[in-house]
Amino acid sequence: MLLRDLRDPRLRGVTLTSVRMSDDLRQGRVFFSHFEGRSHAADAVKGFASAEGFIRRNIGRVLGLRYTPQLDFEFDPGLENAARVEELLRASRPRE
Image 1 (cartoon, rainbow, N blue to C red):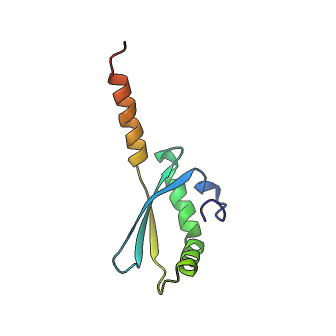
Image 2: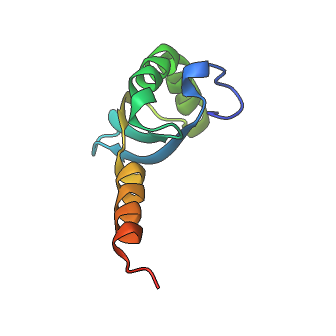
Image 3: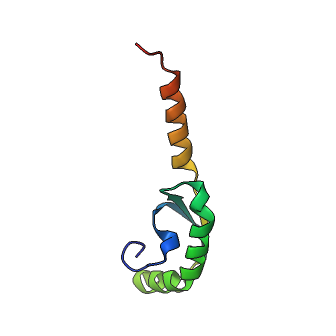
């Protein structure tokens, strides 16, 4: 759905990294990363908020849930942090 149906330019470069659901499946927290980093996260959250009704309708239809979950979208800094650690490790290696 993210690749085919959502055409909001604020969502270009977004990758979903994980989803955490409440036990009753009424609340979901969707974590995402952005190709261009944290600086584009706020715009992506606005894009997701704009498309939330569409996303919820499709999830409800496809999964056949009694209640469609309320979704919150949150930037996941994990990939960005991992890249920074790798960069620091590479810089600290002695040159041969």
